[in-house]
Each structure stands twice: as C-alpha cells, then as structure tokens.
Length: 425
Ligand code: SF4
Ligand code: SF4
Ligand code: SF4
Ligand code: F3S
Image (cartoon, rainbow, N blue to C red; front, side):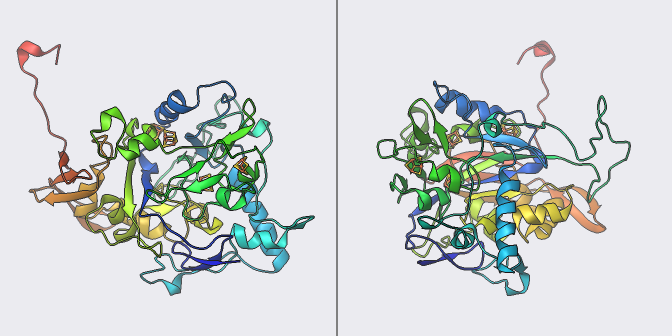
C-alpha cells in the first residue's frame, strides 16, 4: 500500500492511493469555548441542502453535547473501541512520542495505528478492509443532539443537578458542545473505501464530494468515515454528504461578489465561534507559509486550534480550540497531545491572538490575510499568576482580492444613543 505523509501524525502512514494534494484546502477553526448550541448552523445547512424527502434524519452539520451525545449516537466511542481492540490484538499501544516534535511534526509523532493501518488486521472473504469502521444502526441516526446539556454530574432524579461546585482549570461536572461537519480530510476515509470510485477530492480547494451519478449506495463510505459524515438517502438509494456550500467557496453565489465566501453553517453562527478559509498547500501537502492568514496563524503559529481525533489518520481539516474546563485526558484523546499548550495559549492570549480572535464572524467574506494596528493598553491583570495586559488594537481582515473586508477593535465600541432616539435605532 502507498505511504503518504500525515503532518498531524508526524509520520508517513498507509493509504490506498498515492499522495496528491489540492492547490488550496477548505479548512476551519471552531472555538468550542464560545458555542451556545443554538443549532443555528445546523438549521442553516438543513434549510439549504437537506430539506427534501429521504433527508429527514440527515444533518450534515450538527452540534452535539459531549461526553454522552453524538450524531450518530456513539460514533466516536465505537470507532475508538474498534481501534483499541485492534491495538490490543496486535499487542500495540496508541501513543504519541512528544519528544519528536519538529517543524513537520508539530504534535510529535503518533506511534499507534491509524484506521487504515488497523484495518489490515480485519480479514474478510475479500481480503482485509480498507478502513476500520462500522455502519451505525437506524436508531443511532435519530437525534442530532441526544443527551443535550447532560453533564457528567447527572445522577438521575428530576433535574440531576450537581451539588459540587466548579473551578478552573478542570471541572468535576462538565459537558461541552462539539460542532461537527465533514472535515474535507486530506486523506478521506470515505474516498479510500468506495469501491465505485464515486468520491473525489477537488484539486482546486480540497472539497470532498460524492458523485451522485456514480454512487450505487454501497455505503462503504458510511462504514469507513470515522466522523460518520456521509449519509445514505433511502429515497434515492445513494449517499450524500456536506458539499462545503461550494458555490460560495467558488465565489459564484450571487451574494459573494466573485470572492470566496464562508459557507452557510459558518456564516450563520450566532456564537461567533467559527472562522473558515482556504489555506494554500504545497505539492507535498504541507501548508504554504502564510504568516498573516488567520487560519495559518492559529493552527501553525499559535497552535491554539487542534484537529479532531488526529489518530484516526484522515488528516481532518477542521480545527478546534479545546474547551478550558474539561478533564485533560478526555481532551488529549479527542484533540491529541497539543491540548495543554492550546488551552494555555487561549487562557492568556497573546496580544496578536486576542486581536485575530475578534475576526470570527465579522464578515461573510472569507478572509485571506489580516493586519493589526496597535492601540493603547486598556486593562491589566494576572492570569494563572502571570501578568497579562489587554490592548485596544485594531485588526483588519482582507478578502481573496486583497480588499479590506472588515475592521474591528479588541474593545467593542460603545455607542450612546441620543435622547431623542431612546426607543429606536
Ligand atoms: Fe470523508 Fe468523513 Fe473525511 Fe468527510 S470527514 S472527507 S466524509 S472521511
Ligand atoms: Fe452544510 Fe455547507 Fe456547512 Fe457543509 S459547509 S455542513 S453543506 S452548510
Ligand atoms: Fe454553536 Fe455557532 Fe452553531 Fe450556535 S450557530 S450551535 S454558537 S456553532
Ligand atoms: Fe461509494 Fe458510498 Fe456510494 S461507498 S458507491 S459513495 S454509498
């Protein structure tokens, strides 16, 4: 099987196809600390793409309550269990060698097996599987956010409220919201598994699509995707998945004025937790150095945003700023070994990070570059025993054509309404 380089794992891994990379890659950063689970994103996607017959249980975007919730139910627990069983059978462990950190391996090196590698141990009548996976039952697809707001302190009873207090850095009773859509993976498991070669990754932007003409509903993609984002439609008997709102990415949506625009689920986010963009990639799949790109800065420079279950091996292109109050072992399992550094950076953000985070959801245009103009110091305190200061800097975001798309300050401006307009705007 060909060997491909997965930078999130810091090593080469097995993948059924030779390495080939798009010119740029659809990517996004979500700040889990800010999400209010309003599901506006979920409904923005549903009302655009999946309101038809046969799509009733189809939620390309969903927001689920961790640790108990999941759509489909138990998707991550079941996949982790399969991977764990494979390691136990092989006498191997799923670990990371943090000491091997370097420019091409920001999180160190993953020493366990990916879902592609672990699949080689599961032989069936037609040889080994391409990707370790399973097909969820119909019941498991019923709820986009089952166990909504259920915390680990739930003891049963009428409200199940915890009597224990909570304090940072970790809470004893906790839950958090995980926002999910297709990660338009660099090494898509869905694409690897499809026997019809009906799934392709676009060379211009890395968006992963299912060709509706070629698909015959074999559901190997549903089985293989660890994030469970391809979904079968019984009325058409083919599978469908997030299309990354491609007319907006292409700039062909009437609203987008010819430049890439953020997708429906991103642009609708009420909590301002989402930022999306296209990152330029080198022929070897690494990201082109682009210091002033907000996503490059957050993922590669600050390392405040991390991939979801990198150990699965698909190199997902969604990145998450982890929640601050959740027990670290749980978070390390979910986002890899970069968790502690990411939370530290987020808790006491650098002057630049604080400014960049103001750009979330300030414009529907996709931002390609930012600049910061320095402002005065407005606040001083200590965070975790260290001095920390806030500056009222101005951050300016530019669209793909280099035009100014947004300009915001770190401190929200205060507008005093004149007395004669007290009850109007
Ligand atoms: Fe395919 Fe799943 Fe990755 Fe999306 S998240 S590209 S469906 S493997
Ligand atoms: Fe739906 Fe578009 Fe978001 Fe994909 S990117 S989940 S198609 S709204
Ligand atoms: Fe969270 Fe934003 Fe979605 Fe609301 S719209 S659930 S805040 S990601
Ligand atoms: Fe292939 Fe999935 Fe269709 S495996 S044939 S894309 S249902």
